Each structure stands twice: as C-alpha cells, then as structure tokens.
Amino acid sequence: MDQRATLEQLSEVLWRERHLLELLLFKLEEEQLVLSSGRTRWLGHATREVEAVLDEIRTAELGRATEADAVARLLGLDPGAGLAELAAHAPSPWDDLLRTHRDAFASLTAEISALADGNRELLAVSHRAAQETLMSLHDTVQTYDGQGQRATVETPHARLVDRSI
Image (cartoon, rainbow, N blue to C red; front, side, top):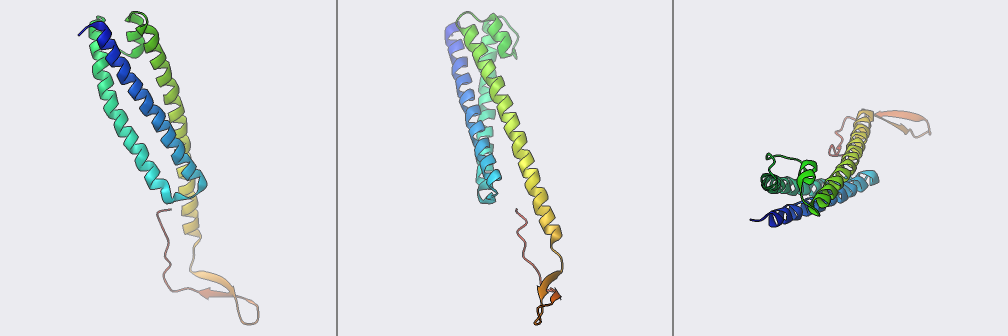
C-alpha cells in the first residue's frame, strides 16, 4: 500500500475518533442536565449511553493505533509514535492535518475531562444529600394532639425509602 493510502486510512480513523469524542461530550452534557435537574429517573439511561460511547472509543483507539503504526513504519519511525511525531515527519498536507487532529483531540479531551469532573461532583453532592435525608429520618414524628398541642408520636412501623436516589 502506498504512503498516501496509508495516511488517508489514518485520517479516516482519526475523523471517526474525533466524532466519537464529540458524541461523548454531548452524552456527558446530557448526563449533567439530568443530574442538575434532580430528576434521576433518566440517570441510568444517560450513564449507559456514556458507557456505550466509551466502548466505541476504545475500539476506535485500537484502530487508530494500528493505522498510526502503519504510518510510522512508512515514515521510518518506531511503532507507537504519537500524532505530533507523525506530523513532524509526514509530507505536506498530511503534516498539517495530523497536527489539526492532535489539537482537536487535546481540546476535546480537556472539555471531556472538565465535564466528567463536574458530573462526578454533582453525583457526590446528590449522594451526600440523599445520605443526609436518610440520616434525618428518625423514629418519632412531630404532630398535634386533639387540643392543638405538639405531640410526639412513636412510629413503630417500617418506612419505605428509595435508596437508589
């Protein structure tokens, strides 16, 4: 296979991976909206969608590694060379294209990392709030008696608490 065809294949794989990273960013934003709204009903679905995109990215990364190693061999580099090194040795216009891909990956990765950190924080806050709510439940209920006076009623019955919150 010639150099141009090999570089084209790498570029196609990189475009696919960029698309998947953008999709992951979108899915993380969806997850954040669900978390922020407090409507946890859809959180499981949102999380499964994030995990599905992550699986696709892992598969795409294997394809990228294979194609990048093929380009590295053609350029006289060792397998495992990064995009910056490939770009430094690639002929024009491939050098610019590889740098553009690398810059896009760096930018998307930073956005994804920040959003994922924010989502983890929202989950932690939600978890703490649920724990505090559960701890605030106690065996007595404040109510009023027949004369309008405060009365404490012992509640010996069990309470149902949704612990998935």
